[in-house]
Amino acid sequence: MHAIIRQGEGKYYVSAVFGYYKDITATDDYEKYLQNIHNPYWIVWDAEKRRLIKWLAFAPNTKYIIPQVIIIDADQSNWRKDENGVGCVVFLNRELLDSFLDRDEQPKEILDKCRTMDAGYVYEETTEIKTEADIVNLSWASGGFHDAFIAKEELKEDGTLYLLFEGTWGYKIEVWFRGDLEYDTSSRHSDEYDHFWLGSTVILQDGFVYLIDDDDMTVDKIGPGYCYFKARHMKYRIIPD
Image 1 (cartoon, helix red, strand yellow):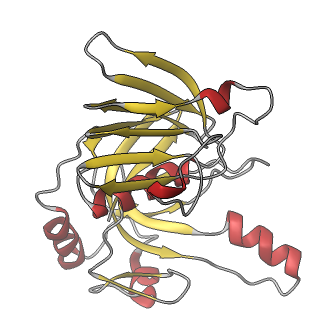
Image 2 (cartoon, rainbow, N blue to C red):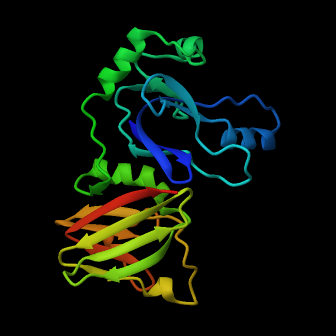
């Protein structure tokens, strides 16, 4: 698993992700709800990849939900986690992490294992959707396009469609479609419909990739009133704020 670690004001770095935890201590339902939003944190590298740190999932001291960790590679095949997604990579555990995370000097053997796990990963700013794993990664990175809206739509001279999505929490998303392009955005330009997306579905089928502005869609359900995109190729880029 890898993520963009947002530092604010457009600054960020890319890190492997080694764990995810929630510290929920409240007994009151509403306080549990608040802690579930504000207490979760990820275990990642610091910006210099010198030590492991806790990084809150959402920006603190604000009433807004602003992600500080944007998952760009969702592979957790080497994790142990519970039904709530809480856990870490197999060579770590909560007790071990708590024993050294707050220390400036951390166990060399642990850091070496983390560097070995991280070795060979290359962050590509622009990613093409080619596999089901790519779809999963986009879903994590985009938050399913929840609260997104199309801020810019431009059909290039070479037939490529360029989209800029804004409204996603803490970042923008650029998307390009090309090859046997078909799309309909009329519903999102109509006064009858809200221009914000609630969710999305990405589908690979018969040599095409589809992006549809609704959850749990299938190709056969696309009809009047749907905003959708179909092409031979789709790629995207995350732009942290």
